[in-house]
Length: 89
Image 1: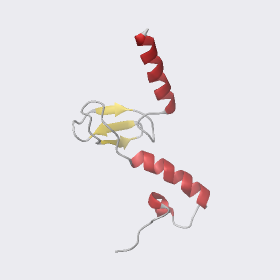
Image 2: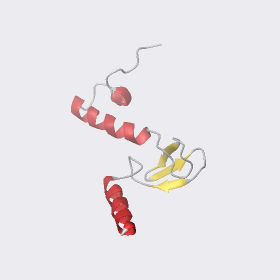
Image 3: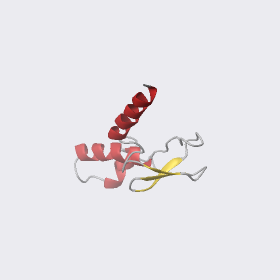
């Protein structure tokens, strides 16, 4: 087997095109997009992206709405913290 892509990882599909900085940015986006996340219902690390903003647990088949590239967006995290603070008062 070949050595694979040690440095560039998932951005190796772009080859020598688009410049190193853009490939590094795309690598970060693609890694968060294709990562597995923890399911809030069953607690297993089986949530994967189905489509833009749709995330599905492979174990319990529960569907979540979230961000386009990550399961939760920074704005969503802020909103969840605001709701938690409101409920504790």
